[in-house]
Length: 285
Image (cartoon, rainbow, N blue to C red; front, side, top):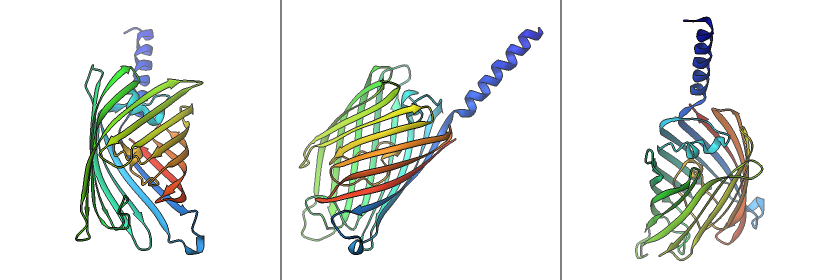
């Protein structure tokens, strides 16, 4: 082999090793959130906090992109995930476990997801707030890529509530869900995502979020949601404020393999003004 060819081969091998070193196929995430009811004096408030943890395994090595936190979306990496969250006060707890799957049909614009979450609560949200019971949520959607990084989807969210108290009628309903997710170039990459749910439940649900990437290692986010629950993906493992919520966030990647995000949300819990402050750590390998 000629000396020039040998140098080229070594250089190409080095580039390939560098690329594969930054790729990941597993993601682990944890989050802690401190909640505050603004209408209640601090001296009279019970301590309210929540934490969450989850893990996702991808079907292939995910290659980091400029849109770091959404690399699995832009790389169309199918996945399986599990998550756990717990919200605690001095006299109540809400514990949730869930599993989800996202699938991208190879060499095709089609996509699908499935998710299941079960919660055991001392206090359940809804018309009968204050009663304990079990809450099961089933979610499934099919999607289609209109463009390489723009996806639309439609599906259903089924909810089943079994109250602990005898004589209280259990509830179950099925809502339709339509949504989109897209990477948009506007002074840099934005990831926009939105969804609407409607059907048997009393109120429609809405969600719209955007994440702007200042550079490959830093992003700023904003989100609005009202009566909306999503159990697909790790970024939904933590307990949100129950009703209308506005959230801002900032995420910093220190390497391609780990990041820290800070979040602040303001909204309502059962008609009371509330806010929360969260910290999230994500590891990839």
